[in-house]
Image (cartoon, rainbow, N blue to C red; front, side, top):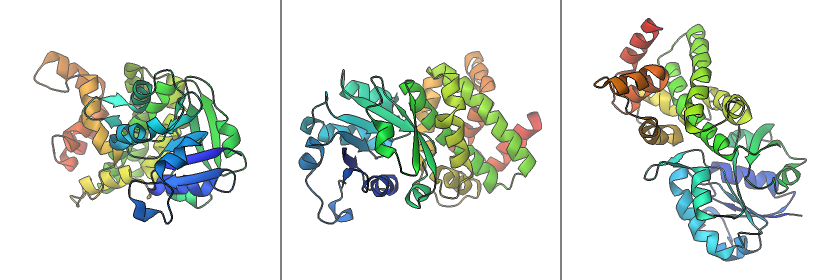
Length: 304
């Protein structure tokens, strides 16, 4: 029986704990001790773990991993990130952060459609486990549960796919908030899929990874589910409602734009970048430049 530590008692971490606690020796830890009655110390939980799942937002991942890293043997314990975002200060994806913190160590990233509410409800979900070394028994850990795990060696591609699906799900949420018709929404989703491949290629992700479970499948789940924070963030933006939880998509958009180059009509280079990625450009206009979503969509659909 594998010994599992789950860091982060948010919705996803708690759901993952419920899935694994019957099949493994699983323990849950959170920086907020009030979330977990009789919580064991961090050192005790991770020092004996075979696998440590880090279920925290991307902006907290470096601190979370750095907090428990001294307590583990990096040559024995596999650290798995479930975060799907970009670190704002460094513009690094989760795989790049783990590689920096654990050079030569055992680490992995997990992506795919794993909505916490569905995972906790026992509905079938899918994930992609990507590690530069091996699968470290990831499939056997989840065997017999409602989470089906695929294996990939495209660690960066899985990390990139997780970021892109969140960002483009915000766009689909804006469309829902504006009551865009189903036909236009379907057309928009098809354009998202094309653009995700193009952006993924610029960032070093394989096309098959973007087209698969970690990319398209996760995008569709996130774009259309009422449980999705990113979809709901888009709806809030479209309806001028309070944005109570921004979600990873909103937080990752500015650093992604910076990574891809200037999106500006003021220079030939910036105009070319914006024209090559029209959906991302339109989303940046609405989310970063605070342009009116109704007008942006009106102009965008008029130019298609």
